[in-house]
Image 1 (cartoon, rainbow, N blue to C red):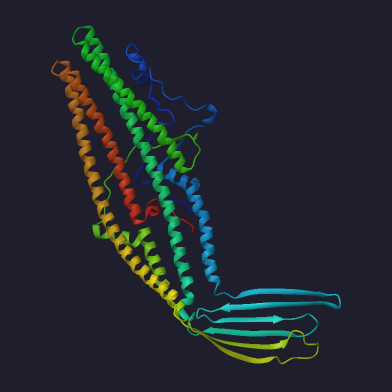
Image 2 (tube, rainbow, N blue to C red):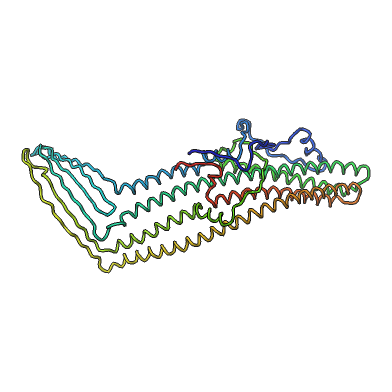
Length: 494
């Protein structure tokens, strides 16, 4: 499998502020500020998960989204299983083609009798079937006693049943089935790529949320220090300090929960790309968001109808269903076969004597089915199946068009939500700053500041989620179009 990939969403030049599996702080001063010892007198310490044993760890490896996709294509068990299935699919087509190729057989016989010398006979045979249903065969028999041997020529031509295009139905079905199998392989690869993209971006979201929670905890602890000083000098009521302590506890809990979610999603990511649970990787956590240039609705629909994998497979399967009617009709016909046979020479003729053989013989065989209800039922079933397949295809086409239109609208809505979320985060940050300033002058309460801080945290988290959703919806649109491999410049060898 040849793989060439580009990363349109996560530029490789961005820095990595974190690495897995443990969440670290940027510097010693930040670690000291966020230390749980600050509130040791009112809050028990919360232990972070212990790291893996050192003998399981290796130095973390930098991994972009493009590299994660390439790694999954090489290591993912589902893709490797699909590659093995392609071997079986290829031989299915070979067998269908082999029907119209010459067939060679060789038969050798030895006869032993106590009253006679051993007798040997060998008989090579060549037979071939044509797309019209004609069956030709030639066999040559020789008893190896010095004679010239004998050759038999035979030809059989169906004139009604098994005549004509019905003989090529299995071959054309096999061609379509091979095309469907290739699409299945492509679809399996696309599904694996989408799973990697989703898992990777989930990790990015987790990292961002951990960063937000850490920053919030840091600010909350700094506020707690200030409130403790104000309580000591009598500028703040002790009840307000209790409110801030509760906020610190809640923020800590949220941080630990987010760290746990990050660890779980990291293991899911490793499973998706087919790596061991102890693999150490660094991912790009910076998100590059630009407005995606969407095509017009008509162009997007045309693109989906031309390339959507499920829809293209349904078109091919409809052709197979239509040919099944021809097969059912063939089974109801009368059987009329014309045959001719000619023999040249004789296998047991003594040496020096040439047998002119027997002249050609002709025969005409007619078979008429009486009250063939089973054949009639089979044809009715085939016609009904074809009509049902056409209705299902029409419904699938409508659903595909509807999906494209919905996905386009979803992406536009996501982009608008990102702009609104950015504005909301900026305004909420200014609101929180103003609330803290009012608190210093006694014009606000700790509860109000806490509410503003919670709203800012919620809006920051929502912004990250909206950005990830926007990127995932673009990925989903490319899956509908069936061009995910083209987006990442991936080429498959079928």
